[in-house]
Image 1: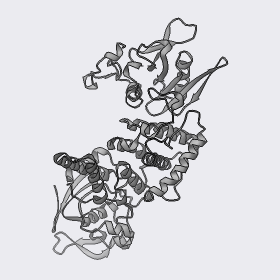
Image 2 (image 1 turned 135 degrees about the vertical axis):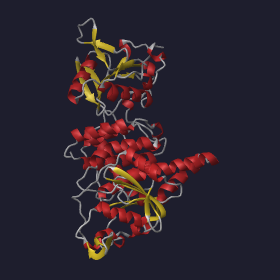
Image 3 (image 1 turned 60 degrees about the vertical axis):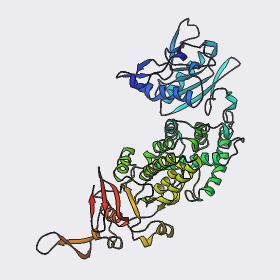
Image 4 (image 1 turned 45 degrees about the vertical axis):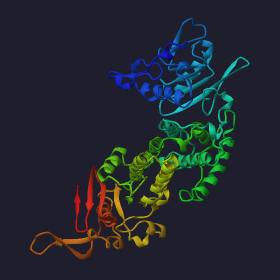
Length: 519
């Protein structure tokens, strides 16, 4: 066993300022950007996702390769070197990882140099935001390089990449890094598609193909969502597109017949290669949620006040309103579903507490969590894309997507679709958590909408000059955030609690039969 493998790795908490503890060796190293964003995360993935023993991996001291074949000394330091055993010999080196070059082209050039000057035949370049996988071929005195979908897991051959059975798939704890790589690759390389919203829609389509494949493939059968090393990208794309037709039927409340996978074949194959070895439905829910937010967040900065509410804000609002295990929860401006997911996490924590206390079996625990998601969470958003994102988010975490509706919360509720009217009623909800759109430039001017609200009317000073009284005249306009407050209070039960974000502040309100108060 190598000396490196025998080291007990301390935690980063034990490293002084400006240092980070190397995951493989346990040595404290300078906390440079490439170290924090690329070297350490990928070293961890090699062990946790690909299964390589730490003793087979060299980070510190760094492995070196020659600058030129004629050199006697090795002068090029390799960020990560992976060997077929724990002796760390030249003849056992088969994989090198380059992290120092931030640009994809420069990174590939450097990686190819390392492969030419060493025995390694596989290479990875990553800057923490993108990844590239290469295989070296030597024939007739020439060295060539092919891009491949991924690298093999420990014990696999290169030829085994993409030949996963359903039972071979494993969850990961670092899905966020994988999703970030996918998003950045597509933003830079997807043909005919550069805006964030279409890219977000496409990645959602592919994620659901992956989930469908995991749920409807026998454990001993080879998965459909796969990309082999020498498989033409057109074949990968055709197989995925065929699978998506089944997805549209299975998740008809999330997708419709107009939804298509419109990425070019190479981009589809790249996404499949990145995700194919993982089992998304067995990942921890927060892992999937964090990854989903990493990808979807940049697409949600619109001109109508939509944006992605930060996790710390949703968590604070949940702490203020404290949802109880039987509470009905609503977000009438749910956007991408951040508050609903936060509420769901809180309710599931309460289910776990009860399950632990009563010693429920795992099947009963999960069944109760699904019931909570389906019966107690409701969300409304007028933006079709955002409501679809919210449905997708809920479906990825478990369920509850059937409680999301694409409607305008401010219009008369009689104008909503039948299903929304059946599921969302005045005075029905124990908890409202929301971050409605705000801004002086956003105005509601439709008289039918304004006429519903006390705050949509004109007001005048009361007789005697004390206070104000409502007139019977409809105001010319009103900002939506003002109307949302009144609509939310109408939807709350007596004794209900509302956590609402108003500009940069969070406010908690309790409704009673005669008044409302902050708390």
